Amino acid sequence: MRKSKHLLAALACVLALGTESIAQEQVRKLEFEAGLGYSLAMTKEEHYGSLSALLELRYNLRHSPWDVGIHYENSVAPLESVDYEALYDTRPGFIPTGTIDEDIHYILPVADYNFHRGERLSYFIGGGLGMSICRIEYNTRGSFSLMPRAGVEFFNHLRLTLSYKYNSRGIYHYLGLSIGGILGGGKKRV
Image (cartoon, rainbow, N blue to C red; front, top):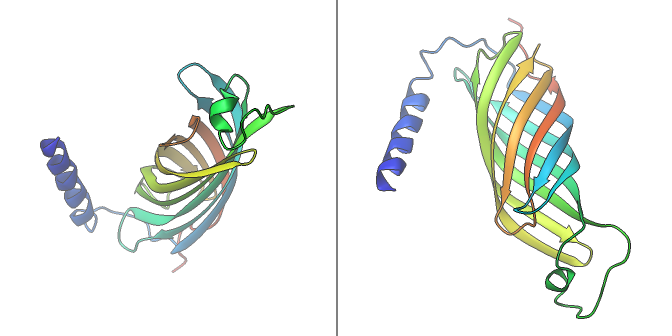
C-alpha cells in the first residue's frame, strides 16, 4: 500500500514538472461544457439504463497539458427489486406505488491531462473526487464519490467521455458515456 502511494506521488510530480517541455498549443483559459449521457447503473444483482445531464466549467492551465474544473451531473435510475423496507426505515410499513427512481446529483472537482490539446483531435484522461447526493422518494443521503474518466475531444468543441462513478453510499455505481458541446476553449488567437 505504501509503495503504491509513493509511486503515484512520484508519477504526479514527473507529470507536473515535465509539462513545461511538452509542446502544447496555446488555448483559451476557460471552457464550458454542457452534455447528455447514457449510463449503465449497476449493483451486484441488477443493471439498468440511466439518462444523465451534465455541466462542467474548466480552466486550462497555461503552458501545461492540465485543466481543472468543477463537474455537475444528474442521473436517474429506476429501482425495481430493491428492499423498500431498508430504504424507508423512517416510515415503517410504507410500500411505495408506481415507479421509484434513484435521483443522484454529483458535484465533483475534476482535473484532466490532455494529449495534443488545441489540435483537431485531442485525448484526455483524468477524473474527479467529491460528493454525490442521492434521493429516493423521501430519503436523501450524501456520500463520497470518485469518477475516473477518459475521452476524446473533436475540433475543440465536441467531447466524448467514458466515465465510471463510484458512490460510497448509493444503490448504484454508474458506467457512462456522454457527449458534450463546448463553448470557449479552442486555440488562442494570436
